[in-house]
Length: 370
Image 1 (spheres, rainbow, N blue to C red):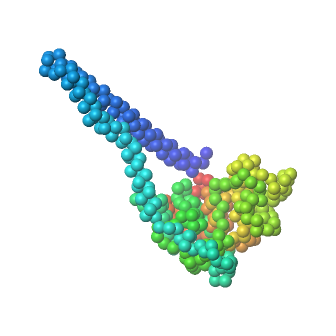
Image 2 (cartoon, helix red, strand yellow):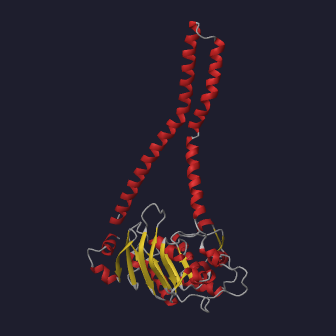
Image 3 (tube, rainbow, N blue to C red):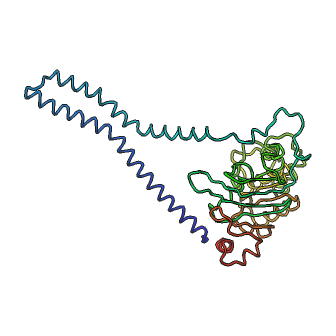
């Protein structure tokens, strides 16, 4: 086990201990809240019958008066018991209403305003079907909860067409979040994301979809043929593009070895493929549209060194702009630039030789711990 693994499991075990303690405390409060109405009802009945019985025996109250008082007391105090029973439901309702309010305050995603389904011509940008591949982030800040400090703070990045830039850092440093900001899955709190020098909102959505592709670390394969999984059911994708993508992903020959080839049915989640094969199918899916900007989020973590090098060479031949999020640092040594994140803040930037020379830097520690 490496040093980074030790740190990860230490943080994980500490977080699990805190969660178990919170769950135990919550269970105790729920048990008390559940038992309290019954206890109050029992004490109420015992008090009325005890005091009333003594008054009846002393002749100060008739039995009918006691029965009538007991019934009135039950009718008056029963709603209080029911209120205690519904305390949890009331709190759950408050939380649900807060969530609805949060949703109602959220502005409509700009992607819907950019769509024009009635347009007869194919949307272009500056006369091109695809972007040239320049990517820029200006003072981007983002978090998941505005009541807490942001995860990404004032981040800046410029990638020229065809360049390869890697983002590395310890777990939880915001690497994958940054990839999702570039892909458009997240919207920044502040700052700008630009492509070819223009804001995302200025570019037609269809042009963005033709130009940007992301290969996430989570594999998403569906119960369908290999062809449909790679093209996502787009019949307009030609065979040549499919074969070129699978060759560059180093999976074409393995597909042909199967009796049904590209008609092979993929089980849900890709259960009939190995982890490395699933990852290469994801890479092929990302390449089949011949994008100009490719985002790789731990996309080769399950590949061996030789296969990873083959895929890396294929991406270089394509000349695609690459933003690479990596934990295994052997994959980023020859990138044009390496950015080191720590808690959402850039702490180092440069090429491998420059960063590794700084023995007090985060990059050097990551390399040694990995």
